[in-house]
Length: 330
Image (cartoon, rainbow, N blue to C red; front, side):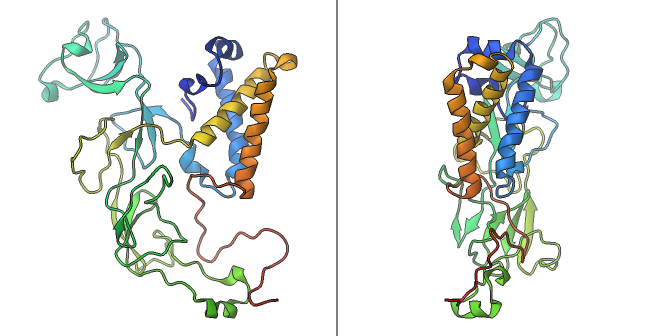
């Protein structure tokens, strides 16, 4: 399973037409989606951190540790009454996911022919339900708690251009860091000593910088944070306190909806070229061109995409054009 799911196509194309495009050959669908992803990434890779957005949606694995923003889905083979299941095997039964528990944990042995509802099984959630690993609790910005919102889904993540206070807590590369030195901004009256803007130092140091933060004078490592193996994909009950360094699953889809739409529209256009080259609906072509126009807007900075930006190394700049902008030049 990749970035898209089969349910993503339901709002854009009728099931019968989709079946005609795929022709029961899902390798063809995978190829079209991979090509669409490559087109999308080629527009965004110079500005946005595409590695965090374009991750596959895989079935939840009880033996695997997961990182922040990772997505899993409840999708397994159908339960078979003739199969002797082992502990931690996962199945789908009557539209829901179930995991076979060890006898020591459930107190009940799972036997062949025994449906999950009879005991010895742990419910996982509805089939095709998506969960994602949310950001850790306890992140602060300028002394105030900060949590992701719809307007800023990556709010707790370290931003090299923010102004941090002493003891602020941020998330960066699967770990939480605490600020040991407040952000020191260059005063306007001091900018002239750098002559050109590209020489002005960045306001912060990356928390995991092996050179500039070698002695942790700017940021100190608090703890590594992951979704530990065996954490059941379900929403934690209200009021539950999550242990430090441990994450829980959040039900829902944390993919950027604009990118999902762009990848889907491009994939449909590629699939249609393999079936109805000379008789493709005009709306598919319009959707394809609209997706490319949207991506160009993100790449050129006309619109802002709500996914993490590439964090530059200290002292590095990306400059567009041949002229170097100078300070105090009139």
